Image 1 (cartoon, rainbow, N blue to C red):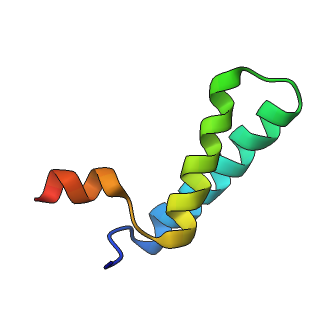
Image 2 (cartoon, rainbow, N blue to C red; image 1 turned 180 degrees about the vertical axis):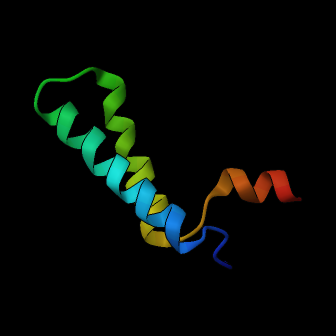
Image 3 (cartoon, helix red, strand yellow; image 1 turned 90 degrees about the vertical axis):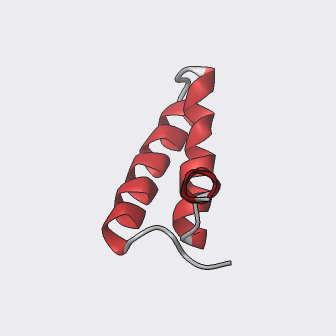
Length: 55
């Protein structure tokens, strides 16, 4: 699995994902738990949606 997310985007995804997850835990909307997906893709450096688009 090759990385398809650059360093700058990984930092943005991680930051926004942590923000969303913290908001969800603090009583925010249910969709804020999608921050887990952003954190996962940032840590792996791979986005499946980008992979599908590039094929």
